[in-house]
Amino acid sequence: MAMHYPYLIIGGGMAADAAARGIRQVDMEHPIGLIGQESDPPYNRPPLSKGLWKRGPRPMPLSRIWRNTASLGVDLHLGRTVLQLDPTNKQVSDRQGEIYTFDHLLLAIGGTPVRLMQGLENPFFAERVIYFRTLADYHHLRALTENSQRFAVIGGGFIGSEIAAALAGLEKDVTMIFPEDGIGARVLPGQVSQYLNRQFQERGVRVLAGQMVQSLVVDETGVSIIIGIGEPLRVDAVVAGLGIRPNTALAEAAGLAIGDGIRVDEAMRTSHPDIYAAGDVANFYSPILKNRLRAEHEE
Image (cartoon, rainbow, N blue to C red; front, side):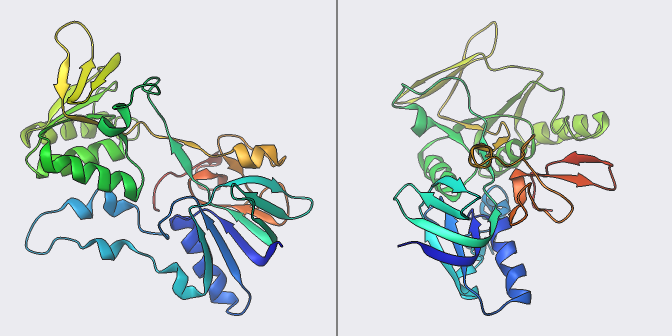
């Protein structure tokens, strides 16, 4: 038998939790359902690469990340992947075969980390190469830091620079590798980007700017990184922060308008009047910038 929700949210991240809180500000009565792919309830993602790594007399406890969505009276269906969306009949189904019907639906399904084009057949790849995004990834990297000293971070954006700083703060040997001239070069002015290069180097991080990773050779003891001519760089583990691709497959299969994400109007409504999108996956029009964009950050 299908479960019906006046408000159904697909996604278990910060946008999903924010939406549930917004609904409760105007409607304390009607049920809200939330379907999340992760087994964990909604949590604050930024501390995974920042606050949880800080050392000192008052380190941030893991308990601070939880958003306590269930306290809003939200039914949490966790560890579930939605496979099909039927806009006409207003229903979705998950991998376990459960069916959910809705009056209003929010797609807060985020994105998937961009991956290196190798490693699918290597049994050691998943252990030694981390595409950092989730709480599980944080726990994975934390465990590696207990017995490993040498780390490489591929990518010079927000995630890459934050993880490099976190590992350097633990006095690990850290090498950053990215194709741009400087850290954050895709969004920051050149002088600022070069300043960040120097700051990271002064803190012991080896910065290999303007370099492309050619391949990785992964075995049970570590990773050899082939960058160019010369000896491979040998490390214990690699963290890849290469950005994300918006999860649009579900919406596209349902016939919703997409284009660098799920396209929405000024009210975050998709091409279906009762289906909305928010968070990393939403492509919206900015009246300030006068163009469409996606925002892959908390603000």
